[in-house]
Image (cartoon, rainbow, N blue to C red; front, top):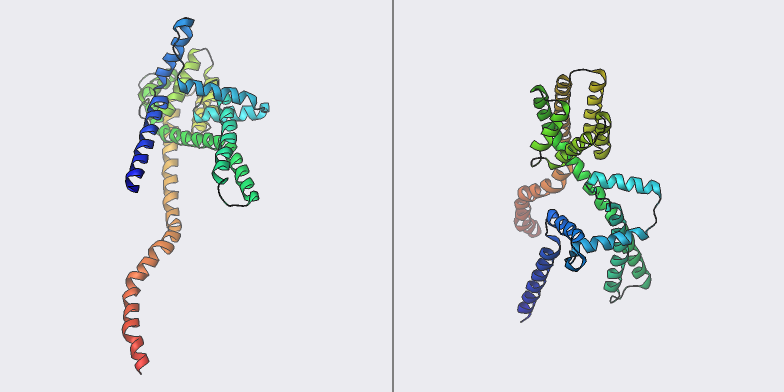
Length: 308
């Protein structure tokens, strides 16, 4: 009877979780944009209900507006959100709202959970305060992780983008057209760097100078390899040198640098394997080689010595 009850509870929780996820969160972004755009254009009596995800974002935005922040911190957080891929104008307010919500919700959950335990009041207070600090810091850590992950993806896709740019420029395209073509071709293979090149193309179409658009690209991503590429392109544009030769030379330099980094990692591999070998492989090796001999000693040699 107990197993049947546990199975019923598991099935109920799984079905409820799947229904909530499919109903509220697993929705394409384009569908949400269409819903919100249609709701702003429709008459008042014909407006559909807002999607729960949109309503939740607005709730987080209102919470974020309540949290005071210094202009310097706002600039740093906004730059970090942009590097993580969150470019919505309300992303900063949603970020602060998530910090406020988790700082209130997580201590409440932990407090209700430990209220039934027999721990000391001081330990309960420390656990609740720690949960509040953890909830307040969790969104910042998540954004920092997303920014590092996105920078890693951009760094991985940069050699392919650079090789494709070299091919486009040597085929007769200008630098602006080459950037646009790279953004189109790498949209599925490397969407992060394709998105960044697409933003550069949009800034150029909006009337910004090429130097300013390239500098914005380097500042948005924060990737050192991309900053080097931007510096090389700006110098080539300023001094009038050949873009194709500049890109090919920088591509060879990046390829050599990648090979040296791989050789460096291979050289460090032996040192990094010392502790896994010492703590994981050697004990099992000793058990396999010395274990049978120890068994024979305890079975035969020790009784023989006692009889003597």
